[in-house]
Length: 97
Image 1 (cartoon, rainbow, N blue to C red):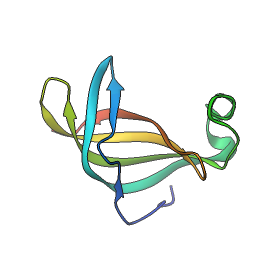
Image 2: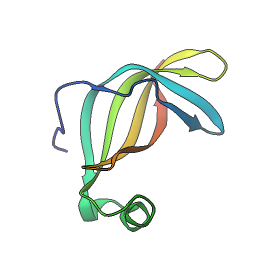
Image 3: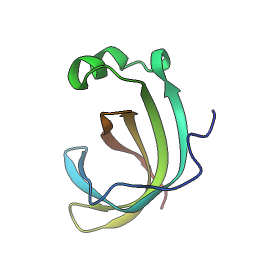
Image 4: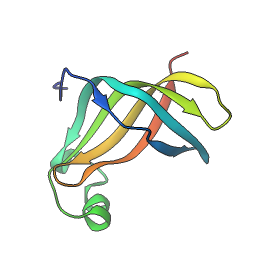
């Protein structure tokens, strides 16, 4: 897959749900890579219906996350993003430590 960006992405104090547990991204997301774009995204029609039309991309990266129980871990995170709409549906895919 092609790299989406070599720079870091910062989710400012983003809190999301992980398996019914809330988590917060601490600091920037590193090593961002493009997973899929446009019609390669299986969830494209749902994203367009829920958030609106746009040039949707699915991305992944690595971040430090704080879980609801206070545990801080390194994790691989995935999310969808479209120009003019922003980052949506951030989720933890796996823990690295």
